[in-house]
Length: 121
Image 1 (cartoon, rainbow, N blue to C red):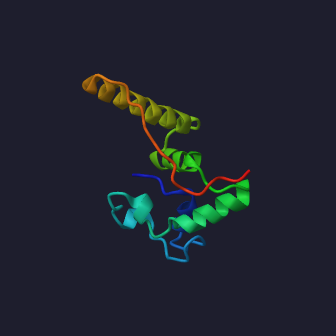
Image 2 (image 1 turned 60 degrees about the vertical axis):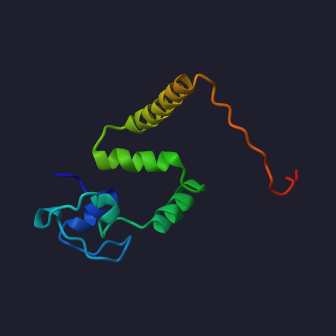
């Protein structure tokens, strides 16, 4: 059985209300988890709550590392696995670009023309 996210874990003990979302948490033994229960768990804090807590604790808005650590915890992976997830995603992206370049027989050279306001120093 999947482990609850940390925000839900204490609320699931005894079916109490989650402080993050003020909704009642049902222990997983009494209900089947939905296909992607982290996103649909009534106890999982919504995005704005995560953003506000990350800003308060770290002093910055959440970045990709925040999402990778949440994914690592949800999957029950060991500490340090978030870096591996990042490296895996980056490597797969590089491989996809290399395959695309090989199929097209030319380098991918993004062309862009900035049309926004002139940046100020």
